[in-house]
Image (cartoon, rainbow, N blue to C red; front, top):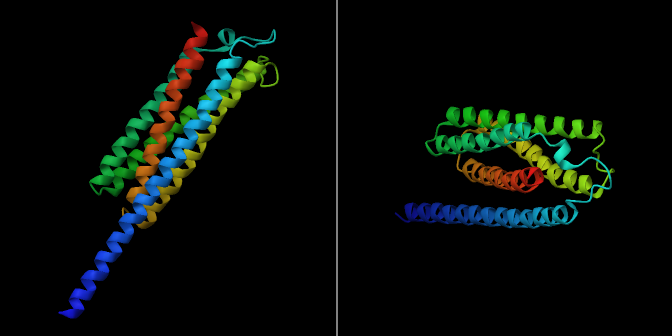
Length: 204
C-alpha cells in the first residue's frame, strides 16, 4: 500500500512538473511573439516615414503587381487554414492526418516564398533595389524580414514533421505543434498588415 502511494505521489509530481514546464514554454514563446511585434512595429513605422522617398527612382505604383501579391496572400492564408486542420488532426491523435496537412501547409508556404523571391528579383532587375532610394530600402527590410520569418517557419515545420515520423504524437509534441501554430498564424497577421499598408495603400 505504501509502495502504491509512493508511486502515485511520484507520478503526480512528474505530471505537475511537466505541466509547469509546458506553461513556462508557452509563456516564453508569447514573450518572443511580443518582441517580434515590437520589431515589426518599428519596421512599419520606418516604412511609413519613408513611403514617399523615391529619390527620382521607380515608384511603388509603377512596380507593384497586385495580382501576384494577391496570389501570395492566398497561398499564405490558405497555409494557415491547413495548419489549423493539422492541429485538429493532432488533437484527434492522428499522426498521418497531422503530417498530411503539415505537408500541404509547407508546400503552400514554400509557394509564397518562391513568388516573393521572384518579385524581389524582378524589382532589382527593373532598377528598384534597396540602394536606389530610402523607400526601397525600407520596403525590402520590412517585407524581407517577414520572408525570413516564413523561411525559418518552414524549417521549423520540417523539423516537427521529422519528429512526428520518428517519435509520433507524444505529450512533448503537442506544445511544440501549438507554438508552431501560433507562429504561423502570427506571420499571417503580419502579412495582412503588409498587404494592406504596403501594397494596397501604395496603389491607392
